[in-house]
Length: 147
Image (cartoon, rainbow, N blue to C red; front, side):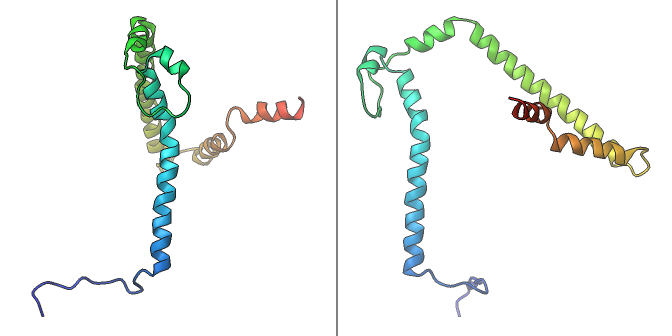
């Protein structure tokens, strides 16, 4: 016997049959097609954004390469400062919102983990109710009830 250890096979391991191989190949083909269908709109937007607008308006069919490469659209967009201000505000809101939510959740979880906390069950019921019934559920129900 060689010095190499033999690989241990699983107890119920069986070699792949021809049907299994066909199924696996068809799975790969189908999932690749679905991936391409999902990613083409993103590619189209990217290529259209760097294409010549006049050539793009005259073009019909699939767009697989830029039509007259130009960055004029990006220059026009970034010339206005309000886009950068919007991104800055978004980053600040997301960062601070995540930080505040994490701090409050950690503090609440710590307090609710104590066994001797008064009204623990009542507080847990209130938190659970807010998880099941969102803020818009009752107004939506009233809107559906009385159109």
